[in-house]
Amino acid sequence: MDTLKYFLAGFVALFVGCSSNSQVAGNSAETGSPELAGILMLDGGKPAAHARVQCVPGDYNILAASNAEQTLPSAFETETDENGNYEFDTIPSGSFSLEAFHQESGQMLLLQNLNAEEDEPLAVNDTLRNSGTVKLLVSGAFRENQSGEAIVIGTTIRRSVSVQSGKIVVDSLPADTFELIVYMDGMSPFGFKDVFVKPEETTVWGDSVTYTLKAPLALPEEIDSLGTVVSDFPLAIRLTDKEITFDSAEVVNGRWEAVRISQDGKRSKKLPITQTYFDASAKETVFWVSVDSLNVSDSLELHFDNTMNPAYAKDVFPTNRSYSLVWHFDSGLAPVDDGAEKGYFEGLPTGAVAADGVVGRGVELDEGDVIVVENSSAADSSRKVNLNYDGSEYFCFSVWVKLESLESEQTIFKKSKEYALRYVPEKGFVVDLWVPDSSSDSVKYAWSSGTSGIKAGEWVYVAFSRHTISQSNFYVNDRKIETEPEQIAWTGVRKLVDFEVGGFTGTIDELMLGSCYRDDDWTRLTYLNQRPENYWPVVMGR
Image (cartoon, rainbow, N blue to C red; front, side):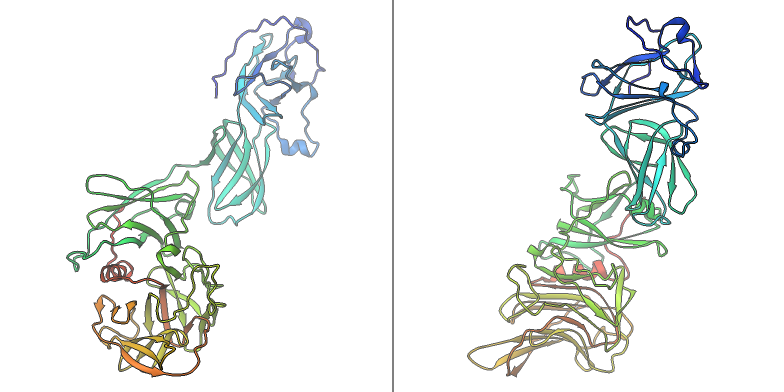
């Protein structure tokens, strides 16, 4: 904004007199000189030709004016000529504001707290600018899309506003600093002081809130080294009030970004990051970051800025990295959201209820409850991903399970005559894969985990990957199951059915299905990252 310049003006021009009013000051009729004059330009350097210009008394209230209780005298309104010149023979007594609007360009001007002395003409030259948008931080008491109005006393500014993503959005404001009074539906008016509007920019009013957090990726003590390079690895990052000030307006309404930093200080490109869980009462939030390569001597840096718009990536669980279905259960159960990049496979629950999970929220089921993925029986070529398994492809899953009882056989999930995860009292967790063979009887392969490490009422991590029948990984928690599968002949017609979770009493969380092979390092690190205690990596607070 240009600095205001006040100076005595000597203009050689023809001046047109305006009618007098009890609010006007000066003696233009006696002197023949205008009380206020100047030249207005556009920010591109051209004259602001035919712009509307107004002198507005400092006590002017546009809400009252709209009710015909107060009007702006015609003497306080004019228009610039072809060269951007304007003039007023009469201006308000006391403090006033000068407003200008150029309709063709949409550029505006607002100059507040101007004063004119008796018999001393005032000249103001300035430049109109593009308007700005202000987003005012508000508390959780404001509902999404709630509407209202915002005004500036002493101006003709009156804007419709609405609550969007936790902010009151006020559009098309002139570049200046002023106080906004906001009237929201069903609420008493409230003010925001010293709102600074920049031209052509979206700003957030309020104290700037930033965090820079660090999460060293050094391996947990129980792992000495990695045998392979782990890439495109999704890390769950939990933040509590130990790391951030847990205020919803700060944490939700802003942008989180993540980068990997090597030991020599080199920074990676920005990594995909998404927030899946936020609980204000529990003071916990969960982010997932896709680390392009997990070099455990590096660190992960998280940065938050509440003046930036939220932006969350969809490719933390990319389909081209064989993520077919990802259920976090953090967004509720109506339906269960699919967090994989394409999001093809939402779950429709019957009887299931939300519960505390391992990472954020989970889902609790009784024996008769199910969650079904409709239309998952067909192989849709347009999707380029499906939940079917024909016996020849790669296959993998991971899930956290908490069974209330270990006394009876229970099914965790299944896709009949394709694959299933069961619990059998004397065998532990059992993974079934059906492999059809057109030349002979088909075979079902069943891998059993044994009962070690499985306790009723406690979370258990179960993960399985199949490359070939002879090359498969099976884990319960961080224990690799070294066993050969049982081979069981079966006959009959193989019918594709929909995938469903259910047939047990307990809780599950973080269910993932894919069409790839996950090695030992990947599987163990997933367990260490997601386990409900001894979090890894540990985030260093502010």
